Length: 191
Ligand code: AMP
Image (cartoon, rainbow, N blue to C red):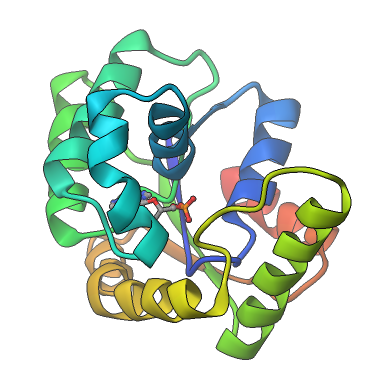
């Protein structure tokens, strides 16, 4: 099974993806994690995208599609969970093409619905927790960058809800439910 987790920053995509990795042997493909890794390891690409990411804007389609292509070629026995990708219509088209080339399909696009006030609280909380635990705080987990990230979501990513709905692949889940309840809803969709 290959699925997309769709939703604004702080909706719980990463948390749910990790549960699916543990429970279903799926492979999480988080373009955000890949980009942060590229920055940490100091690659040219990482340096190029750093300022864009810190401001909360989206990096180019070309870069993220390239990252995803490499990972898809490695395969996944339990299927892929796309977390934070696709984020634009061009990325969604590219994903469809890449999967088709490999003779694979997308089984579901799962939207985690949440409201903005809760997102701000969650992200500010995530930053505070990381700081308290002596872990690095994401440079884009601050209020200014978050506002830009939310705007990018509504402007560039939310059209994907209509896109996958039109393909009959969209299911929406209440992202404000408890972590366990959200996981149960997702498991029901996956069957
Ligand atoms: P995330 O960890 O998914 O919140 O992503 C962190 C940041 O990485 C985003 O704010 C973007 O700057 C960049 N990013 C991650 N995934 C994508 C994507 N699919 N397309 C464009 N930019 C992305």
